[in-house]
Amino acid sequence: MPRSHPARVSLAALLDVAVIGGHVALRVAVDGATGNGLLAYLVSTAAAMGVTAWLAPKVSYRRRDALWWLTGVGGGWLFLTIAWRLAYLPHRDWPPRDDEIPQARYLRNLAYVGTWSRADGREPGVQPHP
Image 1 (cartoon, one colour):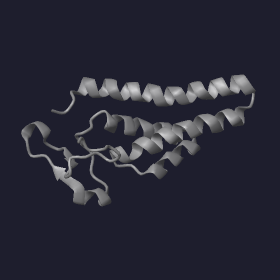
Image 2 (cartoon, rainbow, N blue to C red; image 1 turned 90 degrees about the horizontal axis):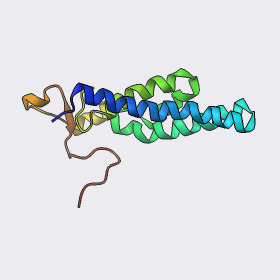
Image 3 (tube, rainbow, N blue to C red; image 1 turned 180 degrees about the horizontal axis):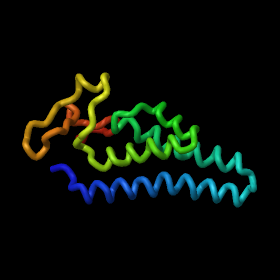
């Protein structure tokens, strides 16, 4: 059964606070420790890009989309969408990318209308249970 809207909002908000808040906190901490704003930007952005690149394929984004963090607000905006989608897995209510279409299986049960999942039952990057 898909998560309820309040549960999805709560989970997405926790993810957003962890990553975007962590990005800001790390930037402030590095800047305070070194006094070098450029170093603080590079370190915090690299950390946020790493997390985004790891999570992006799970929700129909590409790893290279993490480069949006270099634009300033683009990375944070992208991560809001990633967190929203992550909070709904394993159900998906967004259109599959062209390369995901062969693996997409639309769910026909009325409880799952408008969602799809991977045909093999696996999420990208997740090992099958033995």
